Figure (cartoon, rainbow, N blue to C red):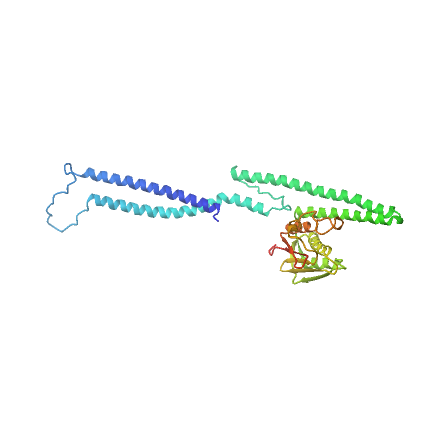
Length: 363
């Protein structure tokens, strides 16, 4: 793939070579015509181009005669062509080097814009290109990009404030409602009381899941080295799986640069999903090897046509509405994307699902 710098260099050198060749042809053609016209003007009148009569040699040492004027003109033109071709070849090489340097200087602002765009994320929206120099097309492009970043930064900050306010406004009435249910309802309405508490906890879990999903989709505000193998061990130690056997295999320590809370939620959602969508006596296998976290379970078979719904929000497979909000794997996908990881899922032989999260080798 040829870059813009290479194409500009080739255009510069090609134009130089073309104009030089045209100039060479014109100059040498005019020179040839001028020499021939001057030679014709030296011929004595009336000879009509006939060769001159022989002249007896003068006594004395022999002197080599001068070549005819026509032959002398041909030698001059050939010499002119040789020198011109050599000069054009050298200048063409020089034009390639100069064109490469000039193209690099012209495209330097474009490289700066590209580097800034590649470096930006939702946590570095405060950075700007701030391109200096004359007011030309490249500076106008950089200023337009900076103005777009200003609008994007204001929009993201507004969404973050909205999420924080919504979190506070939604959690407070739910906490008050839960307290009123636990204290205000008498013991003889235990079934209604438990149902109300169940739905209260379910709504709180849904709000937490939505907030985590929104936070993950907005990117990471900061990164820190996280011992991911310890996160996996902690999640497995806190997992409640009475009817399902959970086994783990962690081959080596693995470090991830990211948010420890979100990484904990990623592993928690994967393990909870594997335990929840399983059958009594089933198994869950968790493996961390080579920067790849793999979670397999022996749950029900997932139809091939439903694989596209696994990571979509509010999609449930083989479950009722009371068992979950359908946000588990969508949160996993968002957290993985925020950490530069890739998520894939495939059916487990004999039923169940295998989900693998591959983290980048070089954070």
